[in-house]
Image (tube, helix red, strand yellow):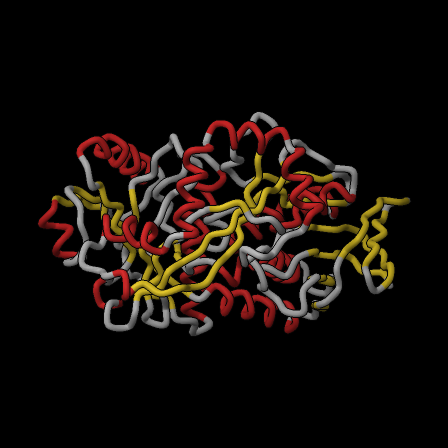
Length: 400
């Protein structure tokens, strides 16, 4: 079997990329391969559903640029396809005076990124937006929203099929090799050839890149994030999104409160090392993955730097009372019995050899292969803009 382009990965980025290629080049033969039995099975289907406005990202970074552009494209797409999207707004809340300089830094970045409608609120202003939230000052982003990203991804898939693209689930990729102006793609259902390959592998992105010899510097280390959900009688305590002020000393954002499209509220996530790439439960263990993580110099450096934070996250993972204590810092009225076990997700965290987290989007590849090496949040928000970026690279690399 021979096709023009194989896209590897049936998450929101892979689907958006296949859609964009077919939109630009009608008649192109595009085959999308997904290892799982269904689309959007991992990060796309397990995230909190936030439509990010671009508050946190370094001005000029790919994240900042593509988040702002992608949000506008996503909102227009959802309106056109009648996919519900709600602008519930986000409060980034400072609880203590020592957080105020960091809150001011978030505001500065957000304004540099062109985020509209921002307001700095005092305690009375916080109470007006979120009457049950704590805080002495907050940054209010009224344009931040929520959506069901799995529904969005499946709409992209429908567009791909309508444009003549083919999607095969349950077909994992085991090898990639360039040969005589084509790429041989080895799958668990046989080989095929393609003029070009684009991988959007998420949790498996480094492994896919390694198959083509593009080993790179970063490695994916999976981190599990668990949520608690507010009981129905407590869900009214949260109107939109309540977030902490990011602390650049620590690798993850911390626990926050997120209203969902179904009216529920999630509290979390924590961040603990997952012992498998799809380790959604504590008992999910892949011994080869554990050994690979232990051998990774970047992870060992990260662990040495943040072992205290890691222990605190692990304790919150084991103790609902400790988790609830953190939630009540932002939502004092919620009771322990109103916080119930919720879903989990696994984040594909790319780590460089020096132990730093790869913060921005990162791409790689060779003459006929293009890899999405790192696409963390806000990748879902930015999916259409990222797809346009990938298509631009593909056109200059594969079709020029």
